[in-house]
Amino acid sequence: MAINFNQNSAFNLKPISNDSVRGEVQGLLIGGEEVLYAFQTVRDQLIFTNKRIIAIDVQGITGKRKSYATMPYSKIQFFSIQTPGLIELFPDSELYLMFANGFSATFEFKGQVDIGAIGRMISEFVL
Image 1 (spheres, rainbow, N blue to C red):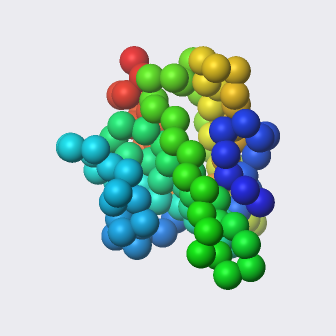
Image 2 (image 1 turned 120 degrees about the vertical axis):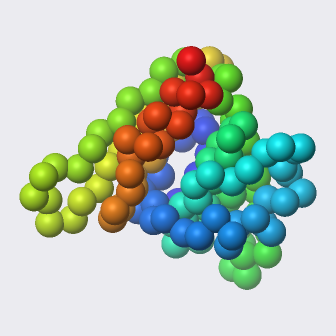
């Protein structure tokens, strides 16, 4: 499933090492921009920096072709988070973002993801 900011959802995002995506986005990063969180579906990636959110859509059979979409935190109108339940068999959490341009995105995170920390991070950059 492609990750972009004009479709409803991306599911099964799992945390990956920030170092594993630095080479992937190094050419996009501006001065002082750092990767804070990185997640991956089967092929696609979602990266939170201290300036914006970057979505990487891996295309084609070989995966060599990639589409990059970015959205700065300044364009977020509002967001909501859903934390996992206390005794869920498969803990997951969700992040919903509504952007000023009318786009929205819902991201479902699998496993042990501190969704509260992501919400605080977004608040720091939006408020």
